Image 1 (cartoon, protein in one colour):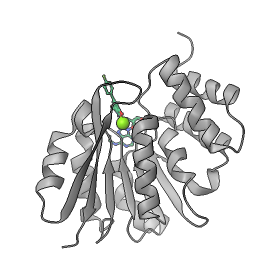
Image 2: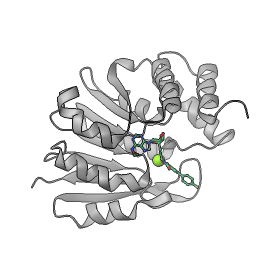
Image 3: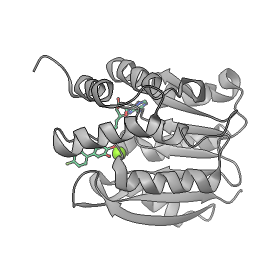
Length: 215
Ligand SMILES: O=C(NC/C=C/[C@H]1O[C@@H](n2cnc3c(NCCO)ncnc32)[C@H](O)[C@@H]1O)c1cc(-c2ccc(F)cc2)cc(O)c1O
Ligand SMILES: [Mg+2]
């Protein structure tokens, strides 16, 4: 097919959503992915859990790993107060280009810093380049085998401090066994599983919320 799925998702947003209305962007993507083409957005069911964690943490600085089309970026950014922001890392330039337009359509570009590049390359530069002290919330939704190494890298870089909340998508499907084992067995994290379903399906999936307790 001539266009990519992310391009078709963007078209659905431009057709169905209202500029400056983040909820209409979320609704347009969910409708398209439920009724036209499945895509790996966190979705509406797990998205509600994401919303509740964002509201509970009321973060000032958020890190998102894996922007894809920007669906969860918009979900997070729409809940942030003035002065708070989400830094989202995406290393596929085509996906990043689509996400920028989705974020722009939602009117949330002032609360989002989309960085085109790989998490492993950028995490070590977060403090210096973005003046980040530590993240209040990290949303992991990139390659599943990268959750654990990137969490360890964030720890090593001092970007996870007492009270930092990690929220990981897909801990059941596709699954992140090594990450789950780490956060559930580490004395430095208090972990809990939020049971849900794989986006737009009846399959089980869930989010794991892990609070860093300090060293
Ligand atoms: O695979 C899934 N997500 C991956 C996301 C990747 C996005 O993140 C970007 N990305 C990846 N690694 C990095 C990186 N750093 C690491 C490399 O250096 N640094 C920056 N950006 C990165 C990619 O470019 C994509 O934009 C998934 C699958 C299912 C699924 C379930 C059931 C099925 F049957 C099929 C699929 C459901 C889900 O919710 C899922 O999230
Ligand atoms: Mg996911």
